[in-house]
Length: 304
Image (cartoon, rainbow, N blue to C red; front, side, top):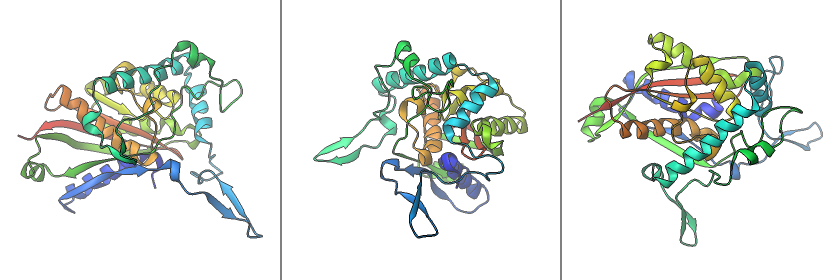
């Protein structure tokens, strides 16, 4: 159970199975339906239910903060100001709105029947009404005098995403014109109190193993659970925030936990196809509850 990283880790596992000769073709990704999640409870000694909102992510002796508290910890530890967080979150909404208006997401979304002849064919998250003044009005949510607000945090979402993982030979047999090569992956652990930087730890080690730096990577997608952790990871890796998450991210589109990691890979392929440079490198990163992070280094390839 990799929590937020489940969708990306499913892709990692499938790629490893293909590389090891364990199968020819996989659908890998994840699905989340937060709106229909069942109630969860422990049973007290007297048999009554003790309801809880989430499972324990890490041993209590190490610390097991809620996500928002951990985001506050990251903001304080790495000096991510409220102003930077708000500006980044607002830009995520603006980029997502512009991408949706341009039809950028159309080819990636499968419409779902919603009853009465209607269908859901677009994300409803990006907020056109947001501006600097409105962002500044949101109060801190998780700590008195803190910097993490509802405006610079993601919202929960239902969603699903999947990709086909196979060998280049099989992909050509199926008539695929292009794709992303899985060049390497890594998962790293960090202190649970600073769980938001787990992705940076994984990406740092992954890039070093390939003798690369962030400057060598043309496309970057990071799951925007909180603006604070996103900016802290970018700072640690030397990634210019302007060059990442080109069409917005989870701050605007929502975070469907099990699906989000696979959404990153879907986005990277779509972006690579806009400027199809064979060999262009792409990096998918996601931080994980409990103090982990997963990163995948990908390369765009034409197959025909």
